[in-house]
Length: 80
Image (cartoon, rainbow, N blue to C red; front, side):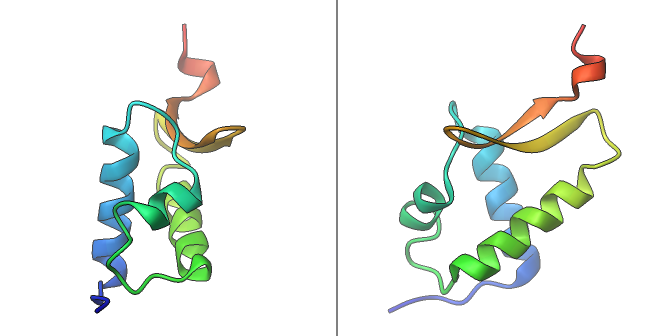
């Protein structure tokens, strides 16, 4: 049985998962791990990741997609 999750809870869960992970996470990894028992479509996941990117757009860290998945990283202009 799949559980439902609100948009705010989903945003918080993905944010926390990406911060806590030692490596970048792909969308498939998110869906197969922390989201496995929840009713989350790939479309909803995409929307949530875009929202996180927007939320962090003016901050010192940003959410970026790398070849190995999504991760938070320091903005390039602040890395020194």
